[in-house]
Length: 203
Ligand SMILES: Cc1ncc(C[n+]2csc(CCOP(=O)(O)OP(=O)(O)O)c2C)c(N)n1
Image (cartoon, rainbow, N blue to C red; front, side, top):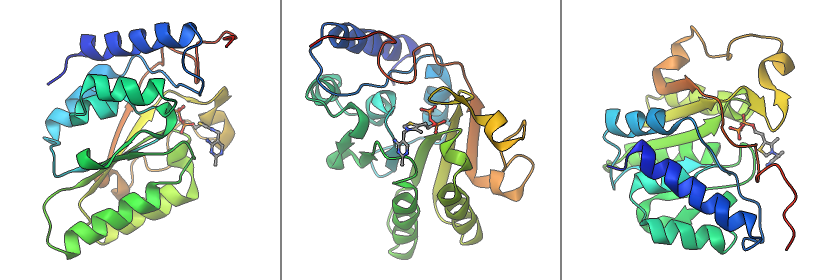
């Protein structure tokens, strides 16, 4: 299993490459949630049969799922940071808010009804977890007891907008509800800006 330091070092290396103008596509770096993600992978013993769905900020997820470091790095340098997909590792990510939540739930349905091994883990941010599609997907997964876990990394922000202020509530909608049975939730402070390095990169 990779360590917190491995994940930090990887993001620092990508940041250095991005700073040189060598990646001609958006890059979303994350810092401050390494241990929480490692703990979730360990707690659920996430392995090869399991499916991971993520979004624009999935470097750490690919590494933790077992994609080789150089393979993840090459995909990012090639411009695929926000939509990293490694089908042979059952990991799919998209840069579109909400986009893969229905797909993840459908995969969980299929795994259950085809009697296949494996579970689905959908990783998203706090604002994504406030969308209608997230709510519907969790409701469906809980009511049909699908093999799915929805992991919410809460950095308090949607790009630069305060998520809690937007919805007029200090807590996520699912706090204290039965839907928490299929949700893993943690807070963190992102050590990087939402996207890029917070400064203009010239190509
Ligand atoms: C459909 C769509 N609308 C808007 C965007 C722009 N966008 C990218 S990330 C993001 C914020 C999402 O916030 P959250 O789910 O909390 O993610 P995190 O802060 O963890 O990156 C937005 C609005 C997008 N990618 N897709």
